Image (cartoon, one colour):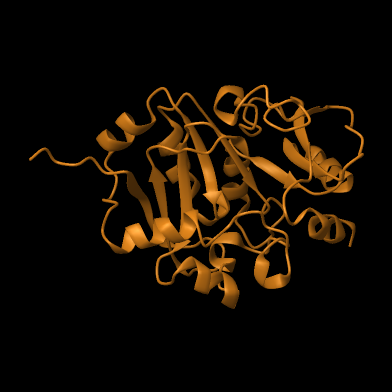
Length: 249
């Protein structure tokens, strides 16, 4: 019988850089996400607890840090933890994801786009793991709400921001990120203006979904310079009203 190929690999096991709790980072080979396209997706999970339990108890700080959109704090996170993250955790428990090798990672990402932090914040994982993962990839997308987290080492944040975008929920946050030399991805209220130096996300409804994340690749961090334009999108989804209230607080 032909050996079945893994659907994903563990690329990191160790302490979270956010609070020291045990976490894992898992890269999935394929995705059916219509917005992103078939990118390599990465999930950052507590290694010792089902993500639903961790979320409800507030122990998701290990992988989300102080993000104001965590559900346990009444936030507006769009991720349905009971679906993707929960399924990935159960597959991890079944032993479906072997530890990655350089050869396996090379085959998985060569010529493909990689999404850093499909669930969980990339800041929780040592940045060299992400550098290793994307080294042979065609490109990457990624976002972090931890770009102002003073508990993180400055060197870690600086190298991470080369790879990912600062997640911003207001014009003031966007101005701050720009002043720090970071590109960003800003969510704005319906009717909110697109600021100078911004463009509408090509994968959004307002842009006619003319691209997917895998064919766009604009959200690739600040490595090529902070002056490069940053994308913005109108808040959407079931928790849009909650997001607007939080952003305005």
